[in-house]
Length: 174
Image 1 (cartoon, rainbow, N blue to C red):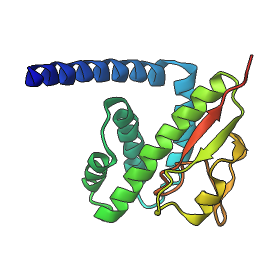
Image 2: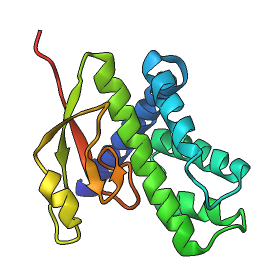
Image 3: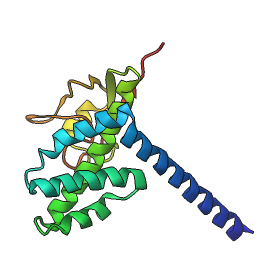
Image 4: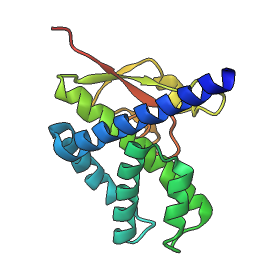
C-alpha cells in the first residue's frame, strides 16, 4: 500500500512539474515579464568574457531552458564543458552563476511587473555565506540600485559569481 501511494505521489509531482515548466516557458517566451528578463540576461551575457561570444550565448540559452525544465547547474556545466574552451571548475562557476542570475532576473521582472521597486536581500544563512553578503542580509534595496555586495561589485542577490543569496520582493500594498 505504501509503495502504491509513493508511486502515485511521484507521478503527481512529475505531472505538476511538467505543467509548471510549460507555464514558465510560456511566461518567459511570450509575456512582458519574459521580455524584460531576456533583455537583462542579454546584457549579462556580454559580461562572460572567459568564453567566445557564441558559447556565452549558448550558456544563456541553456540556463533559460534549464529554469523551465528543472535542470541543475551541474548538468549545464557539463554542456559548457562541451565547448572545449574552459576548465571544469570554470564551467561549474559559470553554470552556477548563470542559473542563479536567471532566477534572480525572473524574480525581478515579475516583481517589477506588479509595481515592486524594492527587495530584501536574503542569504542561505550557513557558514559559507560571504561576510559582505551576511551584512546585507535582511536589508532592503531598490531593484534599480543594487548594493555593493563585494568590493567594487554592485549586483542583485544571486547575480554575482557563486552567490546563493536571493531577493525577496517587497510587494506594494494597494
